[in-house]
Image (cartoon, rainbow, N blue to C red; front, top):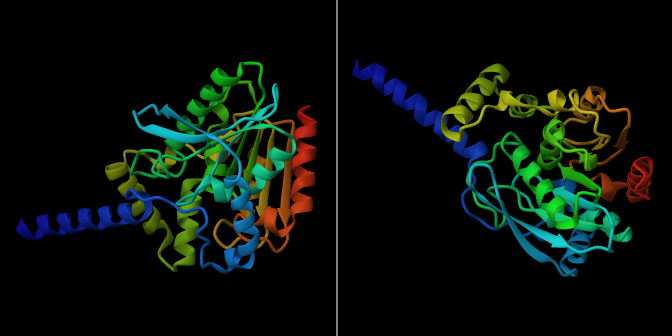
Length: 306
């Protein structure tokens, strides 16, 4: 009996360690000027820092909302020209919008748009300790849309943009969004939490099915969310919202094949796919700014926003 209880206890300790490593984020402030030692980032180090400095040079208003589960979520609002659309930009896992969304910020600035850069839950100034990979964050996304609508008016066109986990979050929110949201711009998002975990298991040479079982169970028990409850694929299939999907063909973290899966899943009549040769994870804008800008402008032109 004692032996059996010891085995159960050890298993739960193992589950908690897995949860802590993947889904728990201690209170810490991310410096957007810190560039990852990853080769993909180091290649574009100076460009990244210049784009971050560009964002930091603009005045903004610190704003806050409440999540459905009572967390205070923070964001930066940048005032654009009167009557302009607003674009809400969501960053990735363990990152910051001032870094991940710096390229999109530059493009939106050129058009004089209003911009809202939230800190995802458990990041920056936002409360929370659990990162649910877009499962809970998708309703946070809807709350930010409501904030923008109340602030700028129901007639103001809203676009959502995201990088990595931020991209997958806005895709998961697609079936929840009001008609005021005119389109999604999704850069290097994964097709499902399951696919992402299994892809990481392959990279780490771990047993794929067992790894996913353990991670899913840890998320349910300690994080209060089920990775199976939603995915970009399932949400896009139920949504007619226009979508531009961008992905680096040399992405070593989120396979480029997931971009094609998300594109194929979308039920929208307006959808575009841009893959950038030689670009790593989140590096498409930096690898080919001209191609990225052309795709962005072609997309928003189809939406009638320019």
